[in-house]
Image 1 (cartoon, helix red, strand yellow):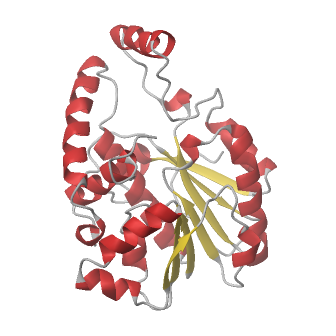
Image 2 (image 1 turned 90 degrees about the vertical axis):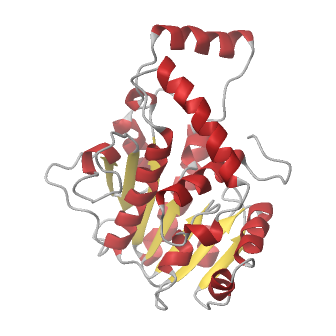
Length: 292
């Protein structure tokens, strides 16, 4: 994964730039100054990419709808314990922990937690958040984290936004199994995003040729661990790991109903919502949900 000179992932800086561009609540306090430059040059590249592949979606709107959709599901769930894994520079924890009854933990790699803490310390608003007894920045790695150790008796929401695309199936399954076992003890909901290859727009002929050259001639594969699973296969894996109910929602199909920002812009990211049998946690209603 590409990083800047400070060791911050370029993807984290770009997504932070998206939150600030979109005017999300509290984004101004958690977005590093270096995000603006990354946001600009990535958008310039994406303009070329979309010219090359006209069927592709706008990246910044994809990320905006992803984030806002997860916010919507989390709000509907009404869980007062939240664990957000790989939170990056997300303003979500700052926003939801404004409710003193909501205990919000952000977990990320130690270096990312240090950058987030430093960013919050640069403003009075950020210092206020760090002082909240119900807000925690926790250094950790999802691949080694023991979810049973932070078990609560209260319904808990576990979020992994923008993370599962980087893991292969063999890496995902033990993580999902651990999360399911954790929620079996407390009730709650697991929310994450994913884009199977079957949901991706087809590249243009020229785009396919250049992609072939990039992968097979130059060995540039990319960070995402794509495989041949479709929407239903992902859901089957989640059930295999212990979740009793799995639903997926495509952002472009729920944008109007969920009142996502810029709902008129077409996007397609799948938001998976997983819970246990007889769960008391609410999940979004939809006239014709794609229950997977």
